[in-house]
Length: 95
Length: 508
Image (cartoon, rainbow over all chains, first blue to last red; front, side, top):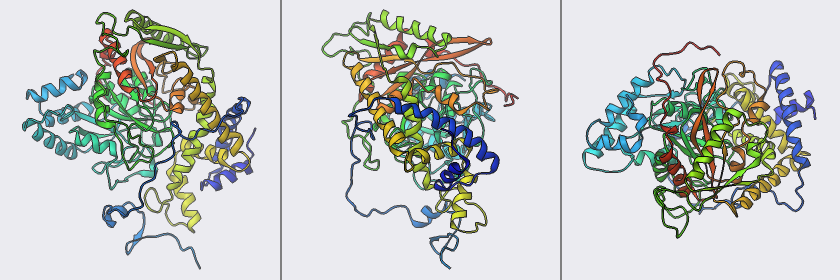
């Protein structure tokens, strides 16, 4: 299948990516050919086969929900682009 | 010069006999790496490395006999480190400093290995040539005009160049085995869950697995001893009894059978899947692989024909599942808590979109978008669930071969290292197709190795070929012993890449 420009824009929006016009065109072409090509999976007979999400078919192990002391707040926040008064800053969300 | 190429045991003995000190090894490595003509290293910090070396030397001086103590290592830049920046080869994480060490880093640190810095890799480990690093491409020490493979290309190149004795890598669809093959070193992808993923920058969580890359199976086994083990912090970590991965070296691999020095692989059945030798395998690779199979037979193994009928489907299955998991994992990069943040955003959505668009490179964007497609409403069942069903069929194919075979052998890569020039504008599908022989073991979660087994001469270049050995799950100890036995009979793993003495002006 060939991905239309509108479909690509929708995927980009879902992925929180904004694409330049040149980027869009080259991605649309390569993604179309990838999707087309992985479509061959649909020819595989899979009747009665359960999807495999984990290579050993194990469920994720749960742990007790107990608080642990991590690094201090400053260390954990040191990589944030903008912060103030011990909080992460984001652009204004509510008017 | 040359000490790094002699393996961990030799190096460790030299340290114990005071022929060299841990700090001298760091100084030598820094001198050898110089201005990094191979583009193999992303971050180095002499003082941080020397500090670790001094601590290791102190333990050596006190008579500590730990087998990895004082031995230098590079960590692939997807393992987070406190003392070095971690970028995962992406602009998104430029300047990122982790508040903690990855579990692998912590374990090797505790074992006394001295970290020399961070190895270059494809951005977020997405690539098979190490040409998708946002910082610089890596080059192959056997010829700087060739790719080192990927995504652990910097790790493989640095070990093959003799700059460092060992390196860590990660393997999602072949990223330890393929660069090991293309650079002529030994690399192991263990059973999924064997090594903790805690602190590994996530790509595709149901496939990602760390592994050792070094000069021999012996070195890889010693590293695995330190790297493997249950970790409560990784929800997919396997709770397995502790084991010594060198325990079958020089012993029979068949239970209750006496070891035969002359026929060390006696009684082993080795499967040769016909799909790994079909059209697409270059004759220059097929020839050394065939010779390696004859060597295994001469060592007592019985090579039998077998079939992994869904081999061709492993590529589309992987390129649905891995991008799907990547699109979900990489959603965390929002420009807020860490990672690249766009300047002067109009609003929150603009902050997200521009931070991500500026921070991610083209291949990462491509995989995120493919992942979003296969997970989206209307396509989820036809693509994503279908890929997971095919994944199970692929795993069942391996199980059925292992009912009558101890190992599966074949090539790692259909070709030797390809030229950097000319393929840089390569169609992404062409790069994906080169992963055909490694993806099956990844999807099935099986342990698999690349072991040097010869060379192909191409354009008067001598380029390494790797033999892939795949084992049933949890059978790393036998797998490593099989590779070790092969390396006792052959010297392909001891062949040295030309010295990297000056920066080469090769444009790409």
